[in-house]
Amino acid sequence: MENEKLMEFIKKHQIKFIDLKTIDLVGRLHHITLPYEDGLLEYLTEEGIGFDGSSYGFSKVEQSDMILMPDFSTAILDPFRNIPTLSVFTEIHLTDSKKSRFNQDGRFVAKKAQEYLLQTGIADESLWGPEFEFYIFSKVEFDTRTASSFYRVEHEEEFFQNAYHAANPFDIYDDFRDEATILFQQMGINVKYHHHEVGERGQQEIEIQFDNLLAISDKIVLAKYLLFNLARRHNIFITFMPKPMFQQAGNGLHVHQYLRKNKKNIFYEKDKYGNLNELALSFIGGLLMHAPALCAFTNPSTNSYKRLVPGFEAPVAITFGKANRSAAIRIPSYVHDPDEARFEYRPPDATANPYLLMSAMLMAGLDGITKKIDPVKEGLGPIDTNVYNNQNIKFLPKNLEESLDALCNDQDFLKKGNVFTDDLINQWISIKQHDIKSIATMPHPYEYKLYFNL
Image (cartoon, rainbow, N blue to C red; front, side):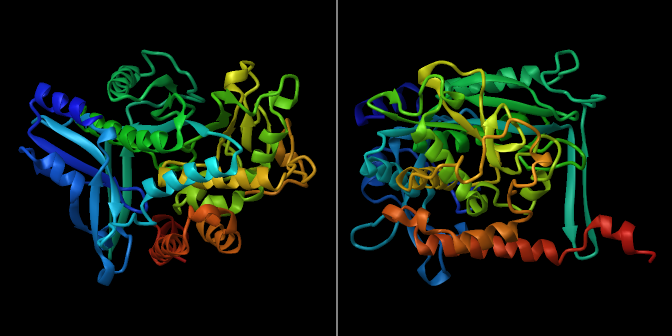
């Protein structure tokens, strides 16, 4: 909001607090709240608020003092605070004399990616449309201790088989999705549609409309905040975990995408395969060529790879095709409008940091365009049949360790335009290696079944 409109908004809603929000490196949301008083907006704009960056997983302890600077263009009235509160996303700055931007701040990475796109002259903007998949449970318990490790989820829904687009009264959470949709729209998140997903025990989907890279990343963070709080209000539990239950469909964060120049979709060409031109195919080629390394950002949890296994429509094949849900890239066969020509990158899940997720995908696609990668000549598709019957298809990494190894060996495309820096990539790898080690050294309940009485 502009300053004048912001002051009108504060007066209209009788704002009593300013809440500054940001996510840490792995994507977890944090906030700090300040009582509103005259002069606070000016102070925050000039000085910001100091915080401990090391507690966000960003930097070493001896370099941990950082500054949160509000981006008032993102200001909304927080619908889950009892006292009127203005909620604002922030930018992270260093404490040097220039208050330089911090290279590990996801919103800064997204801005740099957008700037790099402009520098290439290929397009003016990238457009992104994510699909949120999540489960709703009636009760959740989990704990990990030295002598105990368990989880238990209870679900009100239990279909006999595939629950895709199941109707009420069997779809018992359609009212919840209605309420979430209205809330999204009030907060500036335009919804395309919502429905019950494949999962037979409470899996949901909400798909939102396209927006530019930074805005859509902000909306992903905001959408998760809204859904978690709305679930708490209804005394239910939601999770975006890629694989919260054994032998049930996993949760993805599929992302539809295309580029636009002078307000025109530059991926469209009538009567070509999927109505996509050579530029679009090169973008696809970049995504597929860098797919193993991308997994470090698109699928950054150990749980991610419990979803990325053959079956359950898992997008594990490094290929593309029309209406092929086992391929990493699906081109919707029902799209004929030139303004909507696009494809869907299916591997990502919501354990990702959305700013890094979108930025990494954009950098991979642009690398494909600049290098004129032809996915057809590279043997990456198109494939419109069952990929598991094709012996020449390569597959995504089988675990997080493999994806980090791929990132170590393939990261130059991310560093163009200084979008991703060495310190960010190294810190990311360090954090994720700690996840791997923690899981690897923790006894699993199933191991008791296998080995306790052996």
